[in-house]
Length: 126
Image (cartoon, helix red, strand yellow):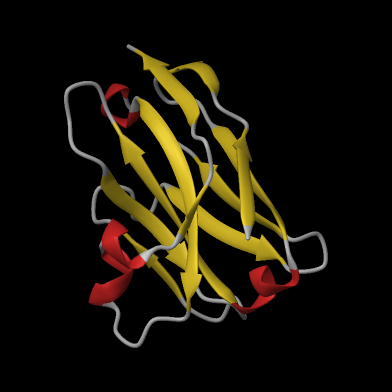
């Protein structure tokens, strides 16, 4: 599975962006896809994930109610709609893919993801 993330940019606090993660390879439709981010001077952290069928989604507490993850398995694309953006959301955002995982907690660790995109920068100004 090859992944390419795009949609980042500069936005004011309170604004919105939609990130896209386009994938190649038939295995994508069988894959869980997650979004992670790495802010300046910070470790990479989990943001959101969606299972292959789209029936289950998971979010970090810091983005619940503001971000929505979705997928279109016809277009082999996963989206991250980010609303009410805050300066602390500033980071490079990465999408990643893996087989469907057994537990909810497993989705939160980047160690469980096998394929990664190149990242897209999101900057939120105050």
